[in-house]
Image (cartoon, rainbow, N blue to C red):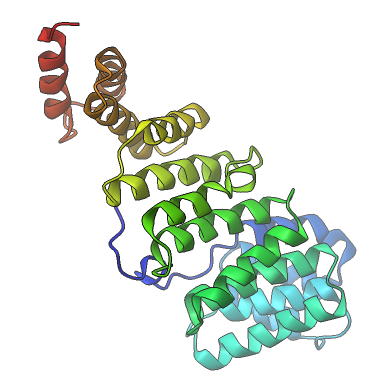
Length: 278
């Protein structure tokens, strides 16, 4: 569970380009040959070679090429402040030239991630950048990703808000962050709400509902899936919902491996609950 310190900057990871690459792959049939090559190299995580491909014929008017150039700059090591500033300038130019098209939406998302991960920025600026992505394309997968990132900021990086306000602000993002475009992101969002509530010593029926939603959506991560089920069991038990807790413990034991260090504890607690009077 996250600590109360600068959660988003615990590490400074290289950008995950899943959606940038998907966009590039879909659009390369309309791009110049160098841009096509650049996206293929990005897909292979050959960031320096990709940057060379995107810049081989100059920046030009090609917005797809400009997006790829910025994305490769942000990922080609070493990731320096100068390179980040250069990429940020490219992305801002993209948004300024045509704020309504899809490359601009991707540019807005990368600008938000730059502010959050790659340079000092005030919380208000980061929040505004994520909200700009959501406002520009509320029905787009990038908006769902931005809403998920924003929920973490609201929950852990807003010292001006009291805990109930933090939770309420993050819950307000549910229509986008919990949408069905990206099931993994939706699952993570609802689990984030539950984790944050428990981190702040808030344990009520809402926590159980959030975990139930995460479980219903599901995840391909087996460890995360079993984690949700043991959390469901523990929360139901803490809330005095004996039968529900027993059911969740059974589900956990049916899917977890016996070497899981939570397996024995779950079995013991299930046995104790089974002996309690209804």
